[in-house]
Amino acid sequence: MELIEFIEALKDISKVADNPNIIEVRMADYAPVVKPIYKSNIVFITDIDEEATHK
Image (cartoon, rainbow, N blue to C red):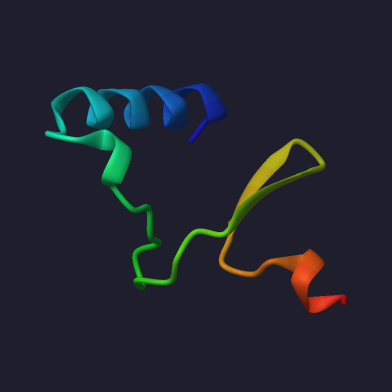
């Protein structure tokens, strides 16, 4: 999926949701989405906060 398609899908979801400000985003395995990371023209959606694990 292209990044623009993903963003548009999220926008569509936010339009039909009753209160998008309180919707939590999770991965399919119910892991919380912590941070998107961009590397080599790919966006990785992660459940790990790399900054917190390197402290």
